[in-house]
Length: 102
Image 1 (tube, rainbow, N blue to C red):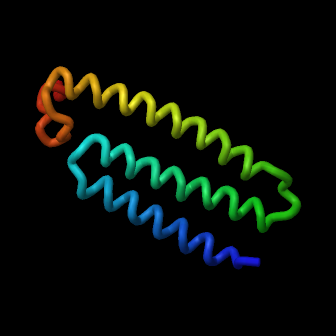
Image 2 (image 1 turned 90 degrees about the vertical axis):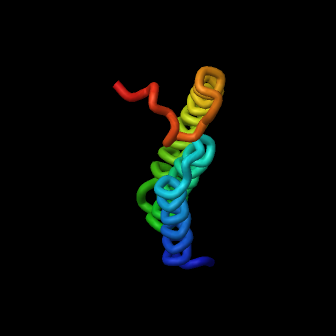
């Protein structure tokens, strides 16, 4: 059986990749992908901690399922926003979107 440390290490690597993607990328689609990677790191933590805590039942798995559903809804709304922004501005580069500022 794989130790909990390995799951936490993989989750930390995924979280770091997601944060790097949020900081360095300018495309709206790449920002959405980075957010999804961060959600996956959190889901991996939830399931890993629930697997190694025998007395908790299925709480971590249920929270992970809710997080997956929320991430799917976030991806659908984000992609709809990116299509709308591209149609109105001609680009999805977040640094060039000046019309959204108040």
